[in-house]
Length: 80
Image (cartoon, rainbow, N blue to C red):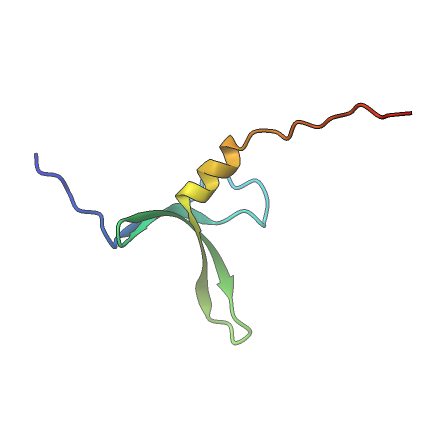
């Protein structure tokens, strides 16, 4: 089986477990010039009544770094 090149391609899937109206209607991934991004989309309607898809893109490394960031070590000793 040959390796498929996903460069400059992406995919969106309908979100099955949307917990609130602020959560995206669709989520997925996109690759831009070899860099992986997380993709989110919301279905909306313009003032003129036309449906459209609003998108947000976040670097995957940024999300991974945020979830793996160590908790700050606070020095709780208070001198009196």
